[in-house]
Length: 284
Picture 1 (cartoon, helix red, strand yellow):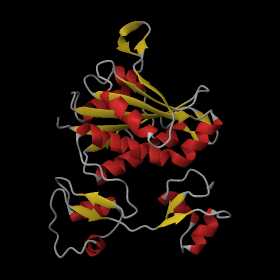
Picture 2 (cartoon, helix red, strand yellow):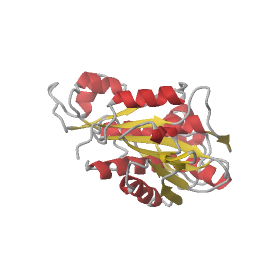
Picture 3 (cartoon, helix red, strand yellow):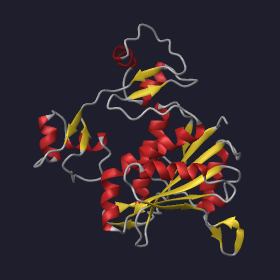
Picture 4 (cartoon, helix red, strand yellow):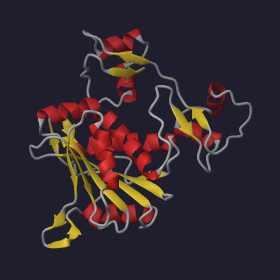
């Protein structure tokens, strides 16, 4: 089945911080995860939109109204609502709407598990006062849409929190893969040579603006002789090299050795703090 689009919902936001603990604020991490998924789907040519792309406040009514107005409310739309759990448990969870089967949730669960992430379960949850309805409003009030909630881990569990801080990007990548697997789009793993797949309506100007470069730079790194591009064309939009963290490394030391700054390293690698692990891969 062809899908109209994917909606990526960053849970909480603004005055609603969500859960907080062990150096993680839920609204901030869900936005980072959602931005990552959004950018990767853009690269792969999958039509998608975010419910929020900044630290804005969305109450439940405004959130579902915005979501339902993006592509409409039909079964050929996917909604992924990103959250971080709390309550003393451990592992990831995937919750899917009562109206849907478990196919998409199972794909997400299997792909997250492939990273070594412990997945507690994928399941449905009913409203106690009316068991014909979903417990969570984001599933209950997005009629017909293929809606799932992903809880990536428990931030009040120290082990889970450390895993989230160091591995959230790899978990987000598996959600990207799951979406591609489910809708039948060819998945291309993330590469340190960043790329973008041209979609309908794209121009060199719009693509260069998206990736903060000039049209001339975009043409130069892709050896383009004209402004003509075609749907499905793969364009290189950046250059990166990999650095493997060694014993004794710090962000300051790595930045100095590679003629960059700590701020640039943190931004490039979506780091929440300056903690590093031996063997960790950084993109320079």
